[in-house]
Image 1: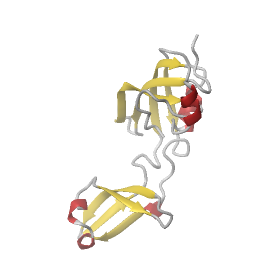
Image 2 (image 1 turned 90 degrees about the vertical axis):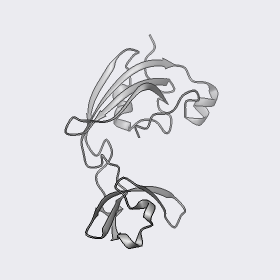
Image 3 (image 1 turned 180 degrees about the vertical axis):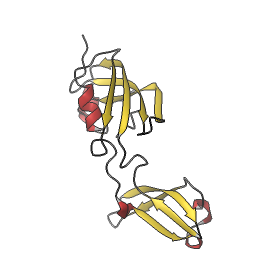
Image 4 (image 1 turned 45 degrees about the vertical axis):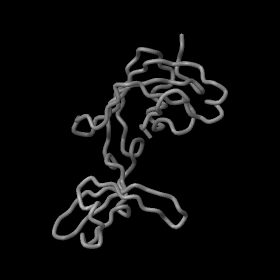
Length: 161
């Protein structure tokens, strides 16, 4: 029987529910990750899938610490709307900022009121417990290239990280 373990390519479908049990993300087309590779799942999800087989459904609750992290208020900035280019003056707009080291991070416009605009670099689920519903669709052995890169080669990777 094919079992999820290190260096297996795993195909899953999944849904993420927020603390109000509303679906906030869902993938009905299988996505893949290399179990124990890089760029895969949140560690709590990957650990919960260990040992499962094709056709199984895994449901787990992740605390903020094991999921999307605690909120970091140092990633929230408010400025006068007049200092913000017009294309970013809408709720949900994505703004890319770079730090001194040249690393990019996405921030999203979360509030516009009283002539002020607020951007937030926290994941939308930061500070929340989430429920993950994961269906194991397929499991296969990886190629040498997939082991070398730590990523599956044939389908989009999951965004559960």
